[in-house]
Image (cartoon, rainbow, N blue to C red):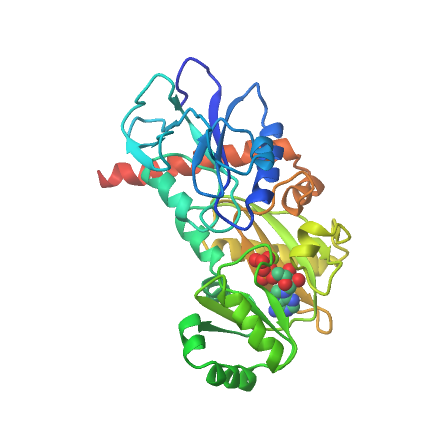
Length: 379
Ligand SMILES: Nc1ncnc2c1ncn2[C@@H]1O[C@H](COP(=O)(O)OP(=O)(O)O)[C@@H](O)[C@H]1O
Ligand SMILES: [Mg+2]
């Protein structure tokens, strides 16, 4: 598996990217790169700018300061362990090509990639698909789980099918909304009462999400969500506590202790997540042993329902009036800064931040070997 003269595993950490969560990704990647044991790993930073250029060798801190992608040089090769089609990005243009072996002596052959890009083009299966094509081992969920987890409607259908409660929901298409908004408003009002939630189906960091209180705010909320996606999700409001569980593993996943988010705003919107630091993380969440166990069990069930691998954070509501556990969503590349919920929950469960990174790398290699086994049967 190891290549080159160094016996260390060459790990490419991919960060940044063309999503609204670009900056969060830089902070997450920075924490991961600092935590990876330098005696075990050689770390190669692979930044993707907001414009989509791949810059190998640029540190996340530098990308935080310099937002343009002009005039950067890079060592552009991300070669796989077995010399098949591999990733190569050409510094003279923004494209990526697949090559069989390093094209110049500057090229560094990587053993594994650690994608730390939240949201679109990073968490949604597209990057994972590219890495599959390049035959590279990588950390985290594969194409299917990433894509299904990113699409809130598809994920809810799979959760519901697995017997996990979801809030009543309805999906509408932007094209239908543009064609006949009045009919859509009438149909929603027939099915839902106020307040209700409106979200772009593919979203993250609460971008484009609103709570509608009446017809006027519903209309605004749909217009707003339609700016971000062609599919719009309407959801019943759940008056609940927000409980999150971290899950880790491939075929035998384990769940952390649950944590609770207490948002400083009316809901956990973008400001509450990243701007205002008054939201509270309670770790572990103050729950009865029964509810704790049930939520952990459901988190693993949800993880399996989407065929996740490596890691995911599963977010629930605990309905205040009934104590009913309702799943909200799954995040396949959860926030990974030192103070993020995902690693914090593992810390509280007995796995330190750097051990967590080690385990994720081991799981990626395990998953890759597992896939090779099925390929061997086909060829
Ligand atoms: N059905 C709902 N009822 C009550 N609050 C909700 C509902 N859906 C979302 N929220 C609030 O909005 C926040 C963001 O919604 P979420 O679906 O988690 O989107 P994102 O993927 O952007 O995190 C949640 O953390 C919660 O505070
Ligand atoms: Mg969320």
